[in-house]
Image 1 (cartoon, helix red, strand yellow):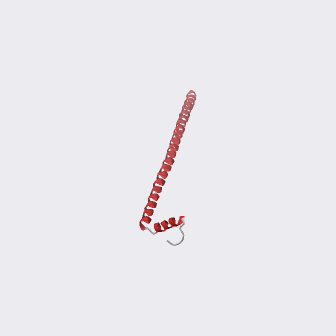
Image 2: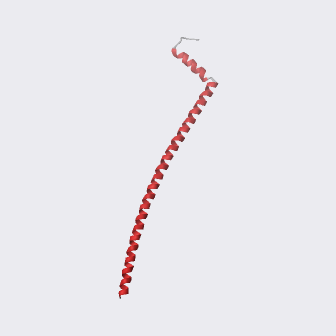
Image 3: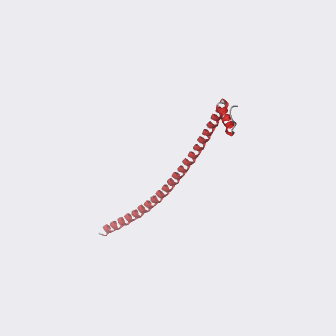
Length: 101
């Protein structure tokens, strides 16, 4: 070789040889593809996890809303029954007065 030997020269020579090696370039490309596929799988897994969490939250909210609506329906029925009873008492009183006349 020409010139003085230095510690970095061997590293540079190795890099130069690696850069021109087609098999090494193919191996690098394959490694990059594998890495990208792993990232995609991880991304899908995270996305699926997030979607499941959102669905669970929505499902719980729907249950709570249904339970709340059920309570309101019970209250409405109770109110209707109470109102119905009032109407019946009113009818009885009214009809009772009319009969007395």
